[in-house]
Structure formats: C-alpha cells, structure tokens
Image 1 (cartoon, rainbow, N blue to C red):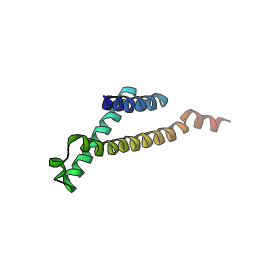
Image 2: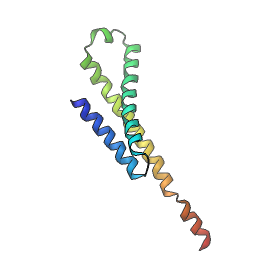
Image 3: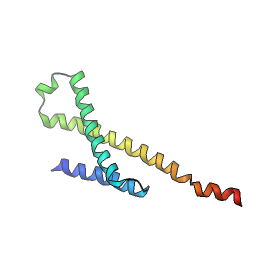
Image 4: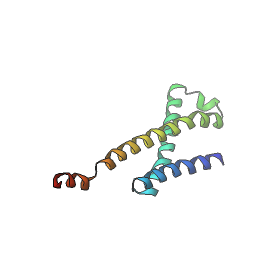
Length: 103
C-alpha cells in the first residue's frame, strides 16, 4: 500500500513539473516512475555484486528498504535536471529576442 502511495506522489510531482513547462504530462509522470524502478534495480545489482550473500540471507523487506532511497535519489536527480534545463530554455524566449532588434 505504501509503495502505491510512493508511486502516486512520484508521478504527481513529475506530472506537475511537466505541466508547469507545457511538456507531455503523462509521459513525464511515467518517466519518473520508470526512473524510480530503474534506481531500485541498480541498487539491487550493486547489492548483488558487492554483497552476494545478501540476496540469499536477507528478507525482501530489508532489501526493499535498502533500495528505496536509491530509487528516490534517482528521481530527485532527474527532477532537478529536468527543472533546471526547462527553466533555462523558458528564460530564452525567441519572441523576446526578435523584439530586441526592433526597438
């Protein structure tokens, strides 16, 4: 149940970010969720590479609690990159550049 709430909030934040910058809302909401799962997958790979017995000895809840922050960090980094990139592009308005030469 808590996993569904986490997925909901990740999608919601990416949806609002895309809406603020007039981008594809649902596409970026889904991208945020996919990046979260990619981050947890990468965490699982690293756990398996550096501590191979953990996959056999740890219960799944402990592994999920270890992988959860990595997925959230991946989402946070992507959110920051998208926001910074879109904000830079929104400050450069091609219509305002055309108006500068006419004044």
